[in-house]
Length: 373
View (cartoon, rainbow, N blue to C red):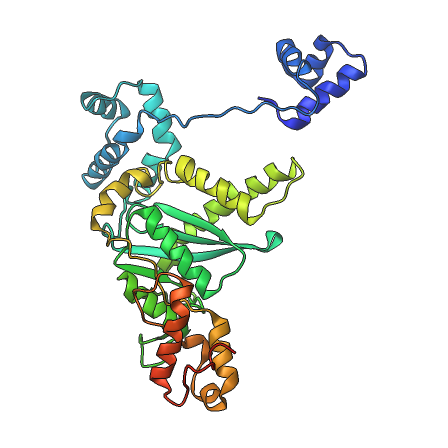
């Protein structure tokens, strides 16, 4: 299919009086293609909705990798023809040539020769989710990225800030997307997660009180990377690179050609389609399987998605309280206040809960108008 620029060039040359044969020669396309696009209305570029086609070799890649690794361990060589006969016995209906092309595409023999373990999981199913922010300053956006450690299934959500409330909301959306909550989540030095490293001794960090309470509510443990050790959460780091160059940059170009800009709405609409149709359905280079296929095995090990978390409170209420009492200001960090009430479902329920909670902590304050001024 021709792109917008090529279609415009055909129209331009036709207006200059060139015939279809000459235009085809100049542009290196067929005369039939010129005829087809010359009949289209000005400004119209046809699009093709492509349904992802499964590679018929894909289901056999783990078995092929195992055969190659065993041969390597035994200091022997296994020909592709032998692999071909083996997977034919398992149901493969493609050609030998196609098998050779796929093995070359994933560099299976080279990776074995380099002593690389072809199929690596490293993390037990349902155990870990790695989390990170990817920033796109040109678009004034950040992307919340979460990758499951076992299946490599990823979730992405574009936001316009990295505040704690936003982080918690993205976590809940990720848990719903994956179908459950992992046993632990791994972070770098996000200021909304960790306040001070080793505050209470080596490995005992001071965590954000609100985020710590959220983790308890959901049932996962908080794990933090060592400083300057990005490889500790290498699964999500590798996906970040994939997201930036295979999706976001391509989206910017696509929208720019139509005189649009990337914004939070079109980015989130497009990234969900990309995750569902491409990113989580591709063969992962490490597992040699599709993330969605492995997620099916991971989901039974996940904790249930919790009910909505009610610890996020209206800051205006807390700010009003703090403004009224100097002793309160001195003794309490406003940002660390949270309401550990699991049954609150809306802000209308939450504000009275704040009042009750604060009166319990500080009897000197009554509810007689203080909160509502």
